Amino acid sequence: MLNKLVDQLGATLYVQIWEKRIRVTNIDSGKIFDESPLVAVEARNGRRIVAAVGNRAASVSGQDVEVINPFSHPRSLLRDFSAGEKLLQHIFRKLTDQTLFTPSPIVVLQPMEKTQGGLTEVEVRAFRELALGAGAREVEVYQGEELTRHTFDYAKVKAKGQPQKNGAKNGGGQAVQWFLILLWIVLITLMAVFGGS
Image 1 (tube, rainbow, N blue to C red):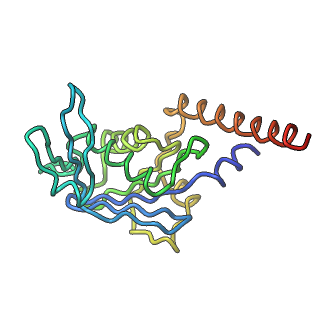
Image 2 (tube, one colour; image 1 turned 90 degrees about the vertical axis):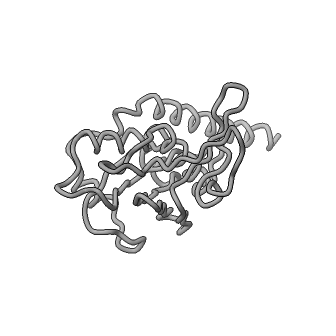
């Protein structure tokens, strides 16, 4: 029952990746991020900070700024794992209006090119780990016809997906989510008890 509650509260995101474009649709709200897959990274005090993502990243300049396209490589759609993870983190936050108590999203990720002959197990795992690292609680790497918000059916995508269990690799993140949900319930209960007296 608690799983159903989390699923209802959390967003479902459909991520489509091309070499020169990334489109992420929040299936529930209809919000869309559709821009260049660029990340401007600035070196600051020995740390790498994201200065901008998407179309804005192309106009960021400076001596310590590097603009990266994590999905541009001659042989593969995934070139820079760390930059790709940062890009997805930013987009997920933007499309889900995340707060302390917002459950992580369910993600369906579809590589849109460089998939001739199907994705290898290594590619599927890399894309899955990319989305999990960016904050997804469950990930399906989808290969098939392009979906729309109206034809999107997560149960069908999941049934068609790989036989591996996706959520198992994010056990630590799920434990934190359960803790936050329980904390939220306790806070609401305390507010109701002490607010009424």
